[in-house]
Image (cartoon, rainbow, N blue to C red; front, side):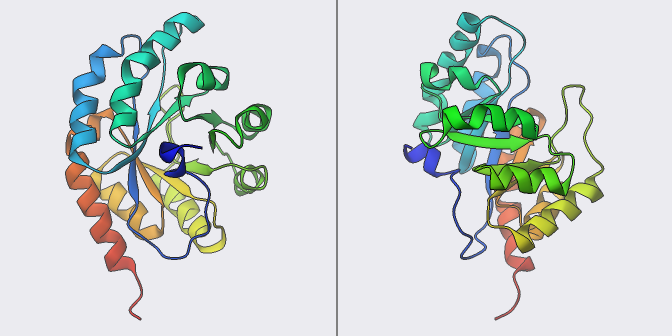
Amino acid sequence: MGSHGQAMGTSAKTSREPPRLYLVTPPLGDAGAIADALADALNAADIAAVLVRFEDGDEAALAERIGRLRILIQSNGAALLLDGHAELVARTQADGAHLSGIEAFKAAAPALKPAYIAGCGGLASRHDAMLAAESGADYVMFGEPDRDGRRPRFEAVLERVTWWAEVLTVPCVAYAESRAEAEALAAAGADFVAIGAPLWREAGEIAQAIGAARRVAEPVR
């Protein structure tokens, strides 16, 4: 796995460092439509990964969209992750894929690991999250919206992140829809905080805020 992949790889938690940002794109039909905003966000903060989501299209069309963003993302030190489409990871020189649901993860992960990142979201229960970890997920994600834009109650997401940070070592990505949510998730122990395009323009400020929130949450030694 290259340097981009190592940024998201599984590792034991030895200290609670400030979380890094994980950007989530809107579903893309035209990759050029977000290129400028994405470049601004990548330049504004330390971004661990960018999850590229797609509108429908054939493989050639999807590969073209990925190709238009790949160098921009990877040259800024971030991992390029595909939302599903694990079969396109190697072909497009992406760093890995994000799979939604434990069954989708189990089906795709063997072909991705160990060369590529395999993350898992869409986890409906603690049990599914633990199954993902046991099945080799490089990270789990909590709180992201589904294809229809619905997401769990924030209080439930915060509880899940707190539990995960206390008992498991696989990195956790927590999805935030505001700076306040990002700060709360950082304080709860998220390793990465995911933000969607409406928050990209605040990437630098959010990165500073989640770092401060983590430091405030640290116990006095």
